[in-house]
Structures are given as C-alpha cells and as structure tokens.
Length: 97
Length: 118
Image: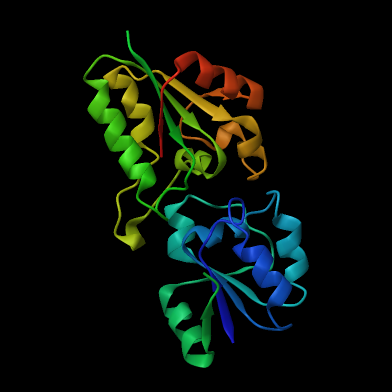
C-alpha cells in the first residue's frame, strides 16, 4: 500500500498520525503541502529521518520546485508525475487526508 | 492614516489563501493605508526564494511581495520561530524583512488593531 500525505506537518497532524499507523515497509509519498516535511532542519526532520528506516519516502518534484525547497533530508527520493503514476500502478493508494 | 495588518498563516500553492492575500493587499494599497504584512506559521513559506510552480501551471507568488513596495506597502514582518522551526533563515527569503518574536508580533497586532487573516 502507498500512503500519501498532502498536508504540512508543521500545521497538521497528518504525518504524525500516518507514521504511528503505517505498516512497516509501506512507501510514503509527500505531495502538495506534504513536501515541506522533506526539508532538513525543520522541527519535524528527525521524525522523517527515523521513518526512513522503516519506509521508502518519496517527494513530488513539481511541488518541491513550486515552493523553492532545496535542502532535503538525505534518503528521500524525488519523483516526477510519471514516477507517481508508477507507484500508484504498483500499490493500492491510501491518501492520508 | 488607517492601519491594517494582513496576516498570512497558510503555505502558498496548497490553498488559495496566499494568492488571495496578495490580491487583497493590492486592492487596499490604493487607499493609502498603513499596511503591515505579517507572516506566521506556514505563511513564512510564501517568501521563500526561487519558487517555480511551472509544473503546477500556476504563477509564482513569492516574487510579488518585494514589488508591493512600489505600492507603498513597506512593512513586512516575519515571526522568527515560525521561520526557524521550518529550517529556514532570513537569507532564504525573497526580501529583507523585519524579524519579530512572539511578543513583538503580539505587540504589532495590538498596535495596528485591525487584522485581515489569510
């Protein structure tokens, strides 16, 4: 299962909630305001770094570029819309709204 | 002169709030008001440099804020804690701003008395 997050973790509990519940190994995709969690040096970076031990984490390039985000946590995979589609083809998608 | 704060708390692109705040500032600037734009929480992301929403087929929002000075909007305040907890520093922003801690933001809001929230 592919879990997706589109809220900023700095102002929403979506990511926290997902990280408590997502089965180990399940891929997580950050898109829209979810991509802010991919940045290093934020209040929530350590949570994401810890989560990378259990989950592959992806961030959508279009949303990173739109927001001017460059300093990303190492290990997060940046993907394009095509990569997003491939992930959805391989996994049932669970939007963590 | 009438004083008003335009308060931005939402991130750009994920919602319409930043764009609407910008339109509102442009709209009220013609009335020669004393406008103070305050960025708190995810609102600070509005000012990050090098925004490029081309793939989202949207217009960049950050670069518009420095241009507001041409409309006599001169005071831009950023909440320092909101910025630092997002891993950002003043050099990451599109313009020089006035950094303010929580109690300073609180004082500014009290001083202006009127807030348009976005």
